[in-house]
Length: 298
Image (cartoon, rainbow, N blue to C red; front, side, top):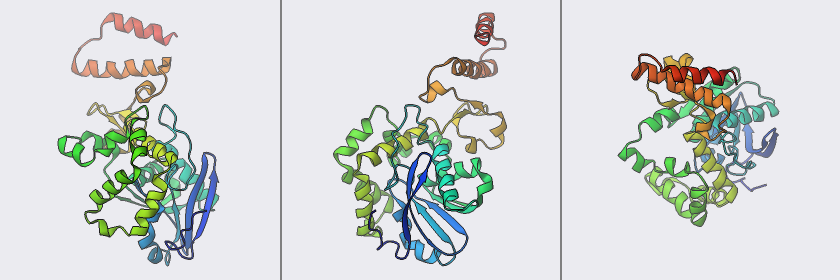
């Protein structure tokens, strides 16, 4: 178990088993439970300057997200579902239940905030309060990508690249990338304590952490955007759909890394048909209608 006593004196260190692996967390304080999710490329250590004061009022649970830090690693799958925010949120609920907390307060920063809002949507009964720090919804973030945004947040498309490309490049110089990102985001590098940076580097040098964090961003570019908005025609998450949420159309699985099976092909044809009728054709061709009928018969 890593020696983190300097960061959280008096806090317990524990690995909590869940159905999808173990999660490392620091636990301490007194009061109603409060769980806090860190961002990329950090670990739970990012909260250490706040923990002492918060522990006077709350029982703090400070986990490393799945695959990050000292939490267990699960090999990413081709469909990017294991590191989708929905799955990561379910792991965090299981963590809190294992600790005896059925309802809790929740704070998320950056990638952790994306897990947090997915958790609040999927498991609303477990969330007493929610605070999201420094994010826009994932689909909105992608929709805003222009030249300036791409230069400022280049790591989004870079980490989402397939076939192991970012993993191999990062593994060659993990310290360089992490220091570069921390300096860029902090403004003044002195704001990050040397011992905090050293802890981030210790974890980020691991091949498993590099793989998991890239899988997190791939999911954010694919599986996390599981619907198409009839208003914009863009891939969106349910959380970003607003008043259109009840009218979202599912994005076929083969467009997010899944198999091109018959149900997915039907979904894809239904999706394209909706936009063809709205924007291009007043009436669908008979050949297409016959083809769809044959597919429905299997």
